[in-house]
Image 1 (cartoon, rainbow, N blue to C red):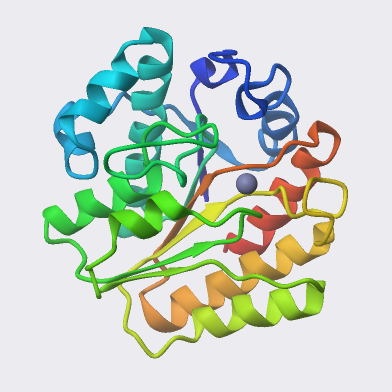
Image 2 (tube, protein in one colour):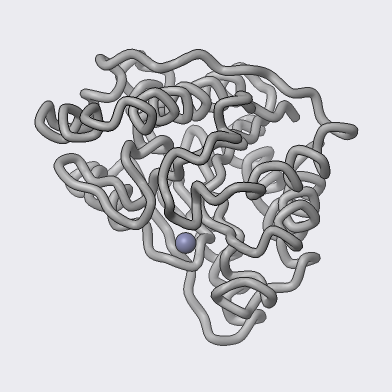
Length: 251
Ligand SMILES: [Zn+2]
């Protein structure tokens, strides 16, 4: 399991909670002893254009810092997907997040849809035909869902539930979908934790989700699995939650 990270993800590029100072540090600290870190390069505009329209890209470019960090985040998601395709699971410890970025608009602290850009790249290169996207962030990834609207080979799942048990059952069920998939991509948002905005999941629940995703990937798609960071705002719990999830997901 590799962790994809770039120093520029420490930057406070806007005033929103995803870009808040001190958000990445506890996750880096929790992971750096256990996992090898790899630095991504920026993605190309061509890769972004597979998901986003030109006008949207131009509007993000108006803030050069956001654009520069954004293409590094998308580059990180692509690197994680490529590593996973080659057989090594990977986690993109990236920001800004992406799942609220649709082809022609964005909101919710997102600019470019990192996970969609990564999946579209693998599709365009003919490496995969189908994918399962599991999004366990508190919020529905409308951007990801909109991007793959009309792509029956890409299954997007966003489990919901008012009780932890109910939520976890839905996670298990979506991994068991009858639709085939060549890779599992996970939008990993930690804002559903009991000490975060969603107030639901325990730290060990993230371990279980990671473990089930690992097992499903081994059974269904040669172990190919990658994930990227989405939300998660309680800095005091992010480190332990991300670590728990990756310990479940790694071999
Ligand atoms: Zn969220």
